[in-house]
Structure formats: structure tokens, C-alpha cells
Image 1 (cartoon, rainbow, N blue to C red):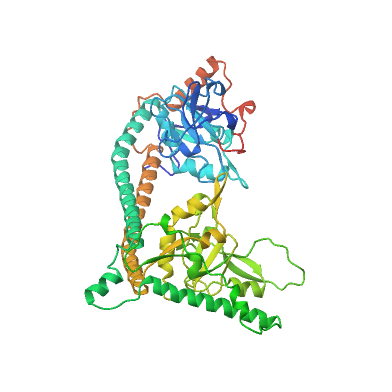
Image 2: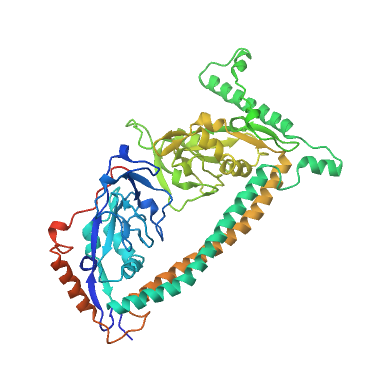
Length: 529
């Protein structure tokens, strides 16, 4: 049995710089790029195209004159993400395993293995945990993570004899063919669970998940309160709260009203445009978020304060905490606020939270506050909706906003470059289907039951996926430790292979990879390529 870190006889410890070339990506003016193919254009891969395999669906096309012959990808080349704002993206690598004409952008590099090694042996190494851990440690930057050329060239690798490389690749192919089929089956189950969740929420928001209150009342020969009458009660409460608030402000200012003329200043919320909305079940009605809730922005981070303000550090919700259908409180931060700000922004059970925006997947994303912390406020990029009536189910409203309501947010979101946002006015205009109060409770209970089963299934599948990845890494680790394929003492030793590679490089009068004048960093990110 070999000691930890020991390699078999005939193997050698090398660096990637002795086995590969590292090629810089293509630079081009954004104005010269196109999103469709055309005469004289060549496709360009970017970091978003790199997964377990290369994805050729979403490409950029640039003039062929921008691409040198060396930068045209060849079969066996490995495309590596070299620069990104996300550390998890940097170092992602996938080989070109099919015939394809194209190149790669400036935020990527291509690794071209020597013709004397099995290129797929090198490609499999880029999938190992050893490589990923090294990249994660080396590529860390303040805002942008960069994998430099010398990082790749200096990466150590256990090099097998050339014939054994072929046997290792063949064994990995055999094991991963079955293995990948199982992983794909798990991914299909995950997709089915996601579709099931969406179908449950769609049925709930359309009145098809449970029997409607109108149907039950007709069947049981009884009366019920339809949503339009329920809404009238909510609007009455809305006005009463406004009047109480205005009266308190006037009295606090020492100007109590002499008559009721001030009440005429109350502005009734506008009804949604029904011509743009789908029909609802009998007993339901359309309303707006502004009609049924008080909307509130949050505290601004980094605002200037006067020296005499008394501040207190309190936990606050950020966009990262407010996910779609749940709150992630694993990393809470604090902000200094005055007593008045804390009183105004303190979250209460049942408050519905909405993200202002950012990436499109964050737009309008949210969930409800259930007093997970005794005291918490929210930042200005997270909006709060506090319902006027306790008979309205906050979960129903949030489920609707996270599913069918997303179309509204996408249409109304203000778009700037790759970001989008909504304001309180747009949020308040969100159309909301309102079922009768009793029906809402039954809908939410049914959603909870069905989604809890879906969540349990999703958790089990996620655990299986994690186990599968651990097994994949164990197989790769065994492969590069010489424990996967048979060894033949008659194979040419890897040290001799290195000598032949070095001689081949010298015969072409090409400086070896790794010399100082060749070690330049991959370009730092300036714009999306």
C-alpha cells in the first residue's frame, strides 16, 4: 500500500507548464461583436459557456480578423475561465471534445496539451478537487478574481506513463458513462420537482388548488362573503388608519383640526386595469398591493449623520437575505440607526418583503417575516408591505408575487445595462388576486402541505447529488494516484516522456512554457466578453 502522496513506479511529478501551452483569449471592441452568426464572423466562447461540458448555445460572434490562427480552438483544447467577479466561476474548465470552429474571449484562456500526452488525461485533471482548491486559493482578488497564466503553468500534476494515460482515460470513460447517467437522472428529478412546485403555485393563484368558497357555499347551501365585500372592509380599515395617523400628526404639531374637511385629502387607491388581467373564479376579485397593505422603504446604508445623533446597532435585512420563497439569515449584518428609524422600520410578524432589484432573478423576489429575530429592520433595497387586515394571508400574497406576479415585475422593472429595479409606486400597483378570507386559509394550508413534500424530495435529491460529486472526486483522486488502471512495468516511464516533450519543444525553437518572459497574467476584467 502506497503512503499518502506517493506515486507509482514509472510515474513522475510534473507541472502543467511542462505539458501544455496557455493561450490568451481574443480581445475585440464590443461594437464589433454580434449575437448572431454572419459572413466573416467567428463564434467566441465566454465563461458562461463553461460547465461540465462546453455549451455552444449562447455565443458572441466577432470578425475573423480579431482571431489569430493560434487562438482557433483545436480538438482537445481546454477552455478555462480566467477572470470573473465570482470566485466559483474562476478556474472552471471544459475541453473541446467535438469538431468545432471558433475561439474564446479575453476573460478566458485555452490550455493546449502537448501532442505527446493524452489531452483528455489533462482535461480530467482540470476536474479534480486538487485543481479547484489550488485555483480558489490563488485566484482570490478584492473585487475581481483572476487566474494568472503562471498559476496554471506552475500547477503540479502526477504524470502517468503515456500508455497508462490511455488506460486511465478509458477507465474513467467507462465509470463516468454509468455515473453521469445517474447524475442526469437526478437532475431530471430536480427539474420535475421544480415544475411541480410551479404547478402548485399556478393552481393556487388561479383558484384550482382547493374548492372555492363559492363552490362550497353552493354545495352546503349557505352564504359566504365574496372578495369584493372583503375588499370593501379592508379599504374601510385603510382609510381609518390614514385618518388616525393624520390626526395624531396634527395633534403632535399642536394644530388639532376644527372640522372634518381635512378628511377629503384622503386618496383612494386606484383599481387595477381589468382588461389586462385574466378572469378569476367566482367570489374572487382583483386588487392592488397598495390597496391591501402599507408600503415602506428601508434604511439607507452609509448616510451622513450629525454628531449629536444617538445611534444603536441593530440587525437588518439585505437583498441577499431575502430569497424567493424563504429568508436566508445565515449571514446577518448590523447597521446603526436612531430610535425613530428603528421604530419605523422594525419588522413585524406577517410583513411581506420584496427586493427592489439587481439582477433580473432578484427583481420582486421575497418572502414573509415570521419574527425569526426579536428585533430586525430592513435596508432601502428591501421593501416592506404590512397588510391592513389580519384576514389576508401574507403567504398567499407572497406566493403570488413570486410566481405569476413575476411577469409584472419584469415588465415594469427599470432596466439599466444588466440590472433592473422597481420603486414603491410600481410595487404598490402590483395586481393581486384576492380570494375570500376563508378560502385563502385553505389555499395556504394546501400549499404548505404540498410544498413541504416537494421540499423533502428536493432535499433528498440534493443530498444524492452531493454524494455523487464526492464519488466523482474520489474516482478522479484514485485515477491521479495510480489506483484506477493497471500498471505495466514495460511502459515508457513518465520521466522519459517529459524528456521527449522538452526535446520536441526545443526542436521547434519555442521557449518553454514557464520562462519569465512568457508569464503574463490573463487580462483583468473591464467589460463582459
